[in-house]
Image (cartoon, rainbow, N blue to C red; front, side, top):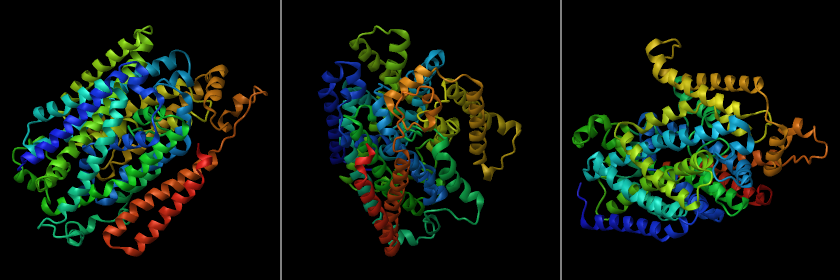
Length: 591
């Protein structure tokens, strides 16, 4: 690949601007832990929304989409499109509840909703489990994408790529705190979008492709275009569509798509100026994430089937790539090697932006758990703000180092994605219900974590060797069904066998957050003078469904127009616009 001086200047300018943002925000960020991790709870919806989009626009996402499309066609994207339902539930139901809670992190929620040693254990354990182990796995998948991009497009070794990407990210993340991350995300988002759309546009003009029409008509592509899978074969439509849309979105836990909100999405909602800005930020995020971004990635993935039909074709074209890093997800980077001078620099900067925006968010989010939910809560409650910021900066560096080492051992983003889904299977319903059902307690969540982890280890590590539960290779989706069933049955049993939280804890939570009172009536009825807030839950769920239809319609409208299906595109566009009008007119009821 011929990376010219112009390309390097563009990349260099990107690094300089990112570093400057971190330096300029460092003084304010270092003034207190709340400034470092929540930007003073004064952020507007547009900045938070763009940051959410930029964070989920990680370099491994187009690789993951490419892997999915090459294996299962466009319809395979329901594996992550289904999470829109979770996202819209967060928009219309949970965003304002999170903002009302006024916690510093979503783990602090545990000692607001529960009490005693169970709540303390949950907070401490998940601070380390999510803040370190789980977070490191996520960052490692992002770093793996950076390794593949650096190897294919720049000829860099894995270690060289990780050193370049991680050093700059650690500097501005540790200096600027969340505000530095948010401002850098805002700048990086537009670079990433320009790069993605520019790359798709140019690739369609490659001689091997010829045009959009030529791509869609190619024999390698024609059977990959459907929005839903073939319903003649249950081994195709069940795992690709039925499981994600019926079970996965509410039953599994995955960063950025947590049922009921959580993680870095909750962190941004908690840093919003008010409830209105928290709701607006999450709505913008879901629109941009699902309706705006996917098609450039999908087009490039489809084009890769023409240029590199098999993995061996990529191996021939890029013999320097280690054998354990070769896979269908490599095709995205391989296609970008055809870009011309100038555009190549922008696209490389956009991919670097995608890597850095995700890593910086996970670094700040993970260190917030380590500092607020472990160090301050359990190690040194009297620690000063200066000390807490220092611990946050040290933990930022440590998390980056750990994730870099793990990235060197990984080979597939899709494989990591599936493992993470398996570990969180069956826990999602708790995160949805704990706001609205008084009976859920700390031991509900502890048991769910333990059971889901054991079940995941059983199906991923033990069962393939002992075959206690026979799962045919073409029915691997049964693992998720079994996992959700075992875990859900387990935590329900534990819930009813253990004592509920004390009334004073439940009432304190209810008074602060004001969820709909239906699931709290058994407690509230014991206190006749307690005001029962029925809330607007039915309207909120209705808006969640309307919002989901709106965004899916916008997503498919774009696809129909790309496919040249004007009538279907027009209908989908009208439905999307109608949904937008309904939500706009209902805004006064939302927050």
